[in-house]
Image 1: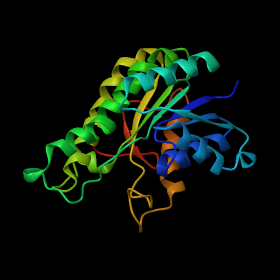
Image 2: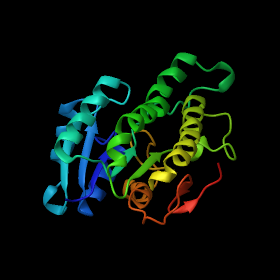
Image 3: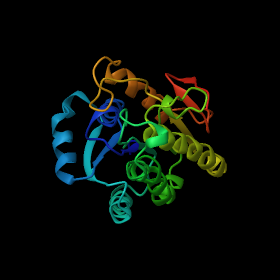
Image 4: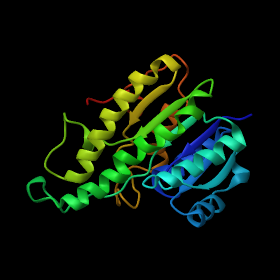
Length: 233
């Protein structure tokens, strides 16, 4: 059986391109979205004939525990394991805010998707990842979440991505004994709906994610990377 990979937020941007690149590598790539219709539309828009793998649409809303559990049940029934989990779903690049006056409701909403969503998804899929011979978790983060370089901008996004980085470290420490590689990846400034015009091509950003998703068994874990090179926390 081919490598089974699941990408949250797979209907757009970095997530969508990650699905395409994984399918090109022969993976069974589960393209997930908050609605089944959006997942199916995105999967249909990708060219399956150009990829040796398979693209499978699946509903998964990372903010809804029942939705995550249903998706895990589908994966368990169909495949019996999950080899790669890519936590790509993210919201709220809040350029209009500064920390001292930030709307905390906006911060809470961002945390539900950007931090609690990946945490919830990892918890739910952990048994299926442990059933894999070569499990990988990739948390799509941002240099905005690096304590070494963050400034006063995008407070909701930056703080929740810093939290995702911390989650990466502690999950990697727990799962190290299982042979699971867990890393955070910054795709860089990418020209997507969230990133806006002027960024690098989406394929270049997604290539960083795919690098971490396809690491060899002796690859790094508990790290923060862009283009395969370490970034400061």
